[in-house]
Image (cartoon, rainbow over all chains, first blue to last red):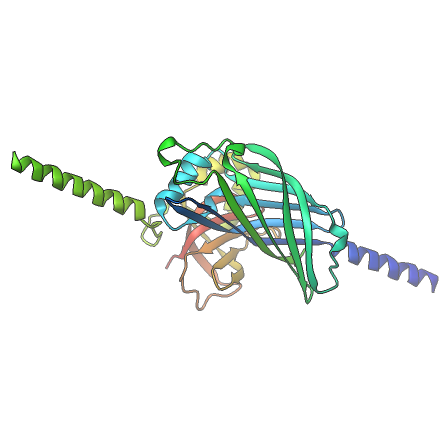
Length: 182
Length: 134
């Protein structure tokens, strides 16, 4: 009897630990830069992200070349001149959810959190803090966040001729529907 | 003298039109593009797993014609992606399909040849602007 209780509790622990990891390979990263001269926007819907709720760790990765622009020329300049995607094909974020315990995975609701970590882009790593919202609905978990990135922080220099066309600070929106990691 | 003014005007107009066209040029479809490389999904993943730097030099921005078996089709309002089996459960070759690509008759297990542009490797190898090769 005792043995079976121990076994059951052990199984339960194993199950709940394994149920703490979530991932997606279809995360969305959208950014836009808006000046009086021009609006530039691009979407990447192939971001990979993993969250481990037991350690509060969260990771994101995107392939720079998978950003889609409306205009080919913008996409070419983005890849060749600004992000230099041949040299730096990936951009990653690694961080921690500060108040992870406030998220109740078993209870429907909207949970605002703060995420702190390091954003690696264009070969430069910088600390970043972002507000994010986790939504739990019928066992499904999704997350959204917005952050602003100063191009100069990441050694992305904009030539003088187009300096009025590209915002110095770019707004990035992130969203993902997570699946349980089996 | 008058004649020259006309020539100059035409040159300026032509230049302007070319510039305008270049500025608005959409991203070209891969429909009629020739593939730079042809290989199967497991070999493509293997190349990145073995030596990512080398695979990046070889495959980034290249139009790849990849053959394989569909392991998953992911679809929402905005996009469609076809996952190709690589023999590794964790990693697939993910082909983000060009908008409006018909995928009727394709299902898990179907064998396909897909042409797409290689953007690199995270946990999976990702191709974008993909089209089904007939």
